[in-house]
Length: 221
Image (cartoon, rainbow, N blue to C red; front, side):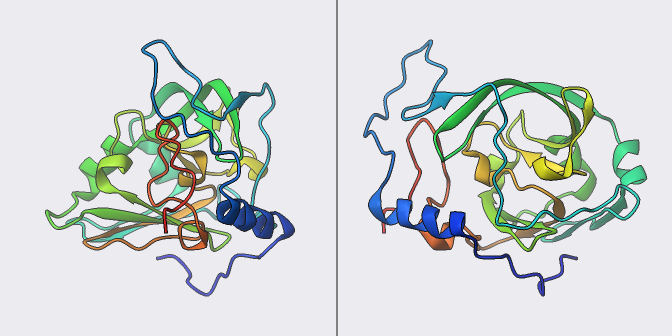
């Protein structure tokens, strides 16, 4: 299970992003979507992949990496990297939309589809939420419906090469239909719960769900 003793760092960027939430920075108020529109409101395209974290980059080798899946499940999982990659692997292409307003199109991923993970761990009927735990102490929460989206993936590779540590390797979550802070880097554990448990950014003024098309950047509280 995740080590709760890992406390995320509070960096200058963290304090800046908390201020953005208080100020409602970048909000456009546009929440309608044209049928052929690909870029969410308030976003701009980039060809680079900016690196954002809490000021700490854990370097976890594939040999040391473990994934724990526990809580409201019928079959808890404790996989090492070899066991994880022995499962059926999926390739997909999706866009990234970061709450800091950049988007990047056509990212090529490879990893374990969340649907296949759900088949392996068998969530109980009372499992309504998941909390993702990362090796740097970061957490974020999703409803089980968002977590189980058809294109959601536990990714170990990007553009045909292993994910680097700066981008969340060995394994990160990818949930393309939500802002990218919901796609936890350096994934260590997935906790299934009956109740919700807001994570690092959610208790710091960011929206509990984070739909880019509804411009759910910040909490309404």
